[in-house]
Image (cartoon, rainbow, N blue to C red):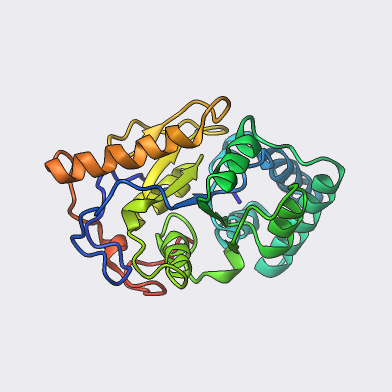
Length: 277
């Protein structure tokens, strides 16, 4: 749905077997891992309006600053913040209520982000595998995917399918593991994540995948460990391939750090680094 600091350190040990200290064999873009809210679709205004309505219905107060602080966070974390703001409901009830409200608005109009569908279609045509990695839960993600003209996404990793949400690397590590079912030799360096939020880019970078940030609702701090674009409009598959090539060159030349952060070295599902909640 809708923060923690973004590490500028790219990980050597991704937590996915076979990636510790691995250098890319070739500069090939094999998979694109898409965030949803704020990257593929501009649903953050839907979430924020639902939050305001819910807090006010319980006699509490809510601000735009509080709403912005939840961008990219797990729904469980966000529900806890809403409880602190005065919402007298259980965590699960809050999640279900907000999700239902956003689905209601999505069914009226899906607010696609500029250039996102075009780039997604280009990846599909180029044979690059795509997966959706979102902290929204399955019902909402399914609504968005259904609105696409083709089955672009091979699978979804949703907030209700992981133990630790973003900024923990588990969502992206889970996606890489699922991709390896059909391609056991897939390298973490051949996967690229597209993200818009602070927790999202932190999750992607900690996992070790090549990370592209397209900030939208919340500005992102400068970080040499990722690439930042202002928009996906006018961007192509070749542009994404260039980012994977850049990673390969930098790693081979030792121009960027390769010592992993703690979260990146923890196996998927580990509680050693704590959850995003």
